[in-house]
Amino acid sequence: MALALNFTGQLGVKGMTPEARQKILAKAKEQGLVLTPDHWHLLEISYNYYTRHRTICTLRMLIKLSGLEKKQIYRLFPGNPIGEISRLTGLPMPKEC
Image (cartoon, rainbow, N blue to C red; front, side, top):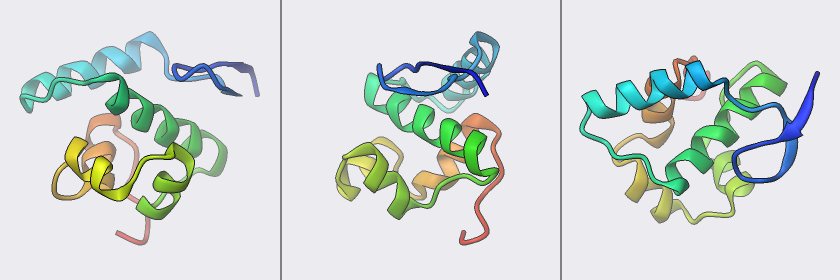
């Protein structure tokens, strides 16, 4: 497993490929969503978590790993944050959802 600095500058599993980022940007544009650095932070965490554990992280784990509050995550991804992240990244929904 290759280690590299990811989008957030943290040492971890090599992040998303440029092609994956472009697909995410296209999906976000279709939904009228403008991705901010906070959006990318959550997307990168979810992608890296999936790479390590073969499941997307739960909301509780995303809060813990991101350092963001629940309301901040809901502001970025209204409704169902994990569902929205799953749709944008193409990662499967966790069993808990």
